[in-house]
Amino acid sequence: MTATVSESRKSGFFFDFDGTIAPIMRDPGAVLPVPGAVERLQALSSLVGRVAVVSARPAAFLCERFSRAPQVALFGLYGMQTVVDGQVRTDAEAEPWAPVMRGLAADAARDLPGEILIEDKALLVSLHYRSVPALRGAVERWASAKAAELGLREQHGRMVVELRPPVERDKGTVIAREAESLTRAWYFGDDISDGRAFDVLRCREEHDAGFMGVSVAVANGETGDELARRADFTVDSPEDTPVLLDQVISAFPGHPPPALTLDG
Ligand SMILES: O=P(O)(O)OC[C@H]1O[C@H](O[C@H]2O[C@H](CO)[C@@H](O)[C@H](O)[C@H]2O)[C@H](O)[C@@H](O)[C@@H]1O
Image (cartoon, rainbow, N blue to C red; front, top):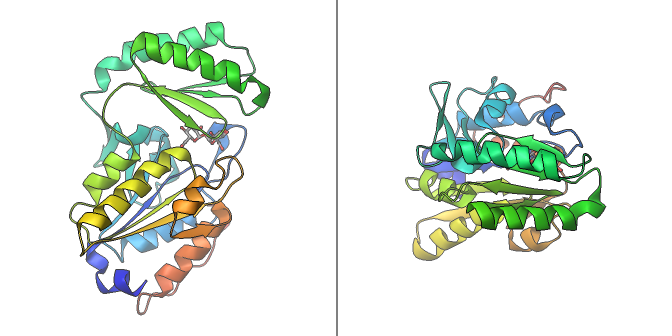
């Protein structure tokens, strides 16, 4: 903590959304940040050089959830979307894939059982089997075949398989770029895709003696303990992330943590 406080303007805090600062629920559209998370991120953003949310959610969804934290940077669809001056910008390399992804969402609706929730995020299609875990194998086989047929990338997550365009964007590439000018970077995540950000921080540390990366895993039985074993710290649930952030915030002189509120 001291190392971060002493180089606060060259420090960054980066957060995954679902399962890290938001609870896991059956209906993705109903998810809000856990109580106090938005306030903690906003408070941090006035103390350090960079605070950002790096998620597979669309940037527009993140804009709604973080409207009360205007200094927090938002990266959606694994970095294929960014928000600049309140406007969502989509990666020029990814955009031409929109028709392919539209067709894919239609194929999924036609081919997969009705219990599979198809989340069509324009440039990313998520196939959720949370309500019928027994269909995991069938969904994964369908997704792999489609990825091979259309030249797409597969990303596995918590009771979900996602398909996306083959562009070089993931949580690791976002963190590598965002942390370039920083000497301290913290990343909080709960899922397989967050491992890429952990890797980038570890690699940068190995090659840059002046850099310190801190990986924080939010434990859960679905991802297993692989991410937690690679983390510097582990918290037990998304609700515990604001508690850890309180410790970080209170390490800054004259900055007691903000009061928890119940509306996220
Ligand atoms: O990068 P993230 O912010 O972690 O987003 C990853 C995916 O999160 C969401 O799915 C997960 O959370 C859902 C809501 O709690 C849950 O129903 C689902 O089973 C989880 O996989 C989101 O719906 C996806 O679009 C994101 O890709």
